[in-house]
Amino acid sequence: MKKDDLLAVVTLNKEAVGGDIPIFFASTQEEQAAIAATLSQVLKAMVHDIGNGVYIIVRH
Amino acid sequence: MDNYGMTIGLGILMGTLARAYMLRSDYRQYPGYPHGFVTHMSLGFVAAALGSVALPSIAEKEFTAVTFLALAAQQFREVRNMERESLAALEEAELVPRGLDYIEGIARVFEARNYLVIVTALATSSANYFTRWPLFSLAVGFLVIAGTSRLMRGKVIGNIAVVKRGDLQFVGPLLKVNEIEMMNVGMPKMREKILRDGLGVVIHPKDDNARATLSNMGQRQAIAHVATAILGTKKDIDTPEFTPMVRKNVDIGSIALFCVPAEKDIKSLVAAVERAPVLESASRAPLKTKAGRIAAD
Figure 1 (tube, chains in turn orange, purple):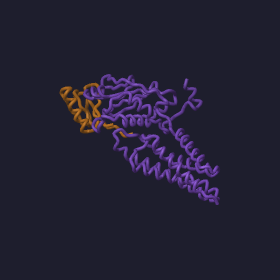
Figure 2: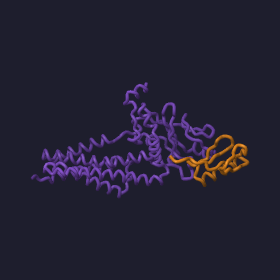
Figure 3: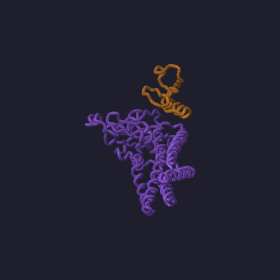
Figure 4: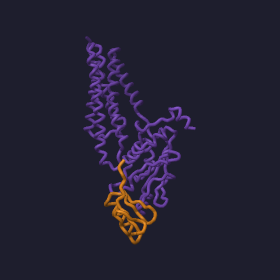
């Protein structure tokens, strides 16, 4: 089975994320959803909601 | 020295007919393009010829002729490799891949069919050799074809499990089919679309053997592939959310399938899953062991 890759993070909450991964900050939920949708299409990857205002983009 | 024309001719005829019948008998294992048809019919003809000359050559005390059967076995193993490689190469282009287990199963079937052709041809020519009664040997040939195709039919999911419709629901971002968790869908729009267009079924295994078989990932992938092959899918390369998924209820071993089909029809989906083949390589039978029966109660 192929390795799943965490490609990017889209967040409303600046405190919740960090590290050497592409991080996109959004100020509203709509903006966050729009960024996540674009990223998932461009990267051909899936958006997961981990609950604390953070979306992760993962390629399976 | 007898005239073997009738014996060999009948053997070849019945063997080739057997191959043609097996091409027809389950189309789903067969890509159905004319060139594949020609390839397999020609190989079937070769196999039939080999089977039908076996007995006459022994009767003529030409024992070395039998070694050609070994050569044939080698040749047909090559058929298996060929099928496996070509299907594995095409896997890349499938939105919902068959999975290696399914491919192995298909390749094995293609190999085995040639041996069945040899058996049919051998039985027909032997019948004619001993009885000198062509009509009787034709009947023997048809009987062997009927018998082998019955034996080789293999099981389908409907034999080992009960397939029922399941309801899709979201708990937060988590998609569930009945109580079985499938995946985390982040995008609210995708969740709406999945609820609108998606379908779910739950596969309840009938016994412990079935439960062990359904746990196999290759078997589950095969079910997802069959469902997609029949109902289509809305998945595209940039919408992994619509990937058909098959997940297990870890406590009771039932299996849930989620998919977003092009044709939203639950009856068709249930029928497709019921007719999905049980893979030979995935098939397990813990109940055949003593230890397995102790655990079964």
